[in-house]
Length: 434
Image (cartoon, rainbow, N blue to C red; front, side, top):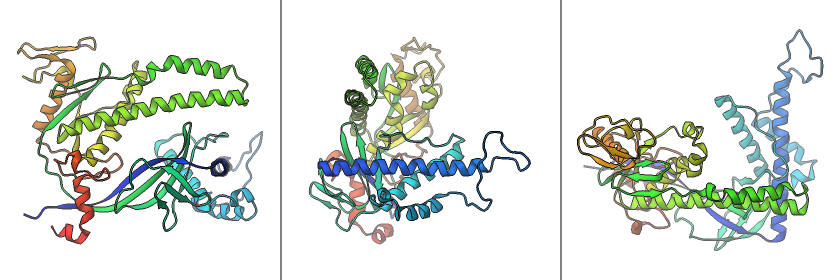
């Protein structure tokens, strides 16, 4: 029987630290400042146009009124790009930055206004000096990559700390330069069309229950303590912020103190992300399928334990890190409803009421175990009753339905799973023919 395949656009983002010279670092800071000014001017035009249409035709404001012609077009992305092209001919600062980089700033702003209309949020905020942290090169040269270096338009060849090789047979689509407290980084986006086989839902399945006492508990009996990334360093952060407050704003000592605060925040975020990736690899190495809870994490983060929920970062782990690691290793992640898992007995299915203080599951049927492990077993039972008819979520950005189970870490090449490797080695026509 021929095996069915799915053609997927696989996107990989590789992050490397830049090692620019003093001139290149100064040029990056200059480009960020110009991008910030373009960002501030663009929403100003849109807000003025919207305000000019708010006045009734039979009344005028007592303070001031926006006067724009009736046939003035709305400053959309295309209109603002044309005005940017005209402004670059007379403004030397705009002409010193790549035109496509500035157009990407306008595109990001246009996406922000689209999200505003969909979500009903407010206007995108203006950025103060130093708040623009990144800019994007949507197109690069013919040979932009070499060993430990990348060629960026307007910057030339910039040395990078290449921690791993570039992915084979992937095409470099764009590069994004990011400024952080610890230095400059470049995010390289690679893409490739791959025909990947449909996943057979077989193998060992592990159910995972997340919480605050333990970061996660599995149906196999594994319980991992929750590291307190932010809480453990909160005292040091408070001390640094108190020192920052006593400095004169804008002075050299104020900038040094501000940099220390930013580095501490970055350390907390990087430590949390590193822990999430290690836990994700540990789960994927011991199972072919992982069942997780479908939680309302936004609502939980607004409760009385919101600080600890945000410190644990369950949303980043469940929605981003774990699905991506599972996809790369050839495993599947399935979400199951979490309502009532802690109140149900995994052995007999009867309801056993517990409060948050009760951390041990005791049932009249004789089932006795930790509460979180019992909840994970209930989650696994629900998955088995459903017959595995779930949608595997192996990519945090798009639905990736082409993951084969059973690949180990030894089968990986440049971080790609065996399924990706086979898909890259076959032409699309041969793969789809089965």
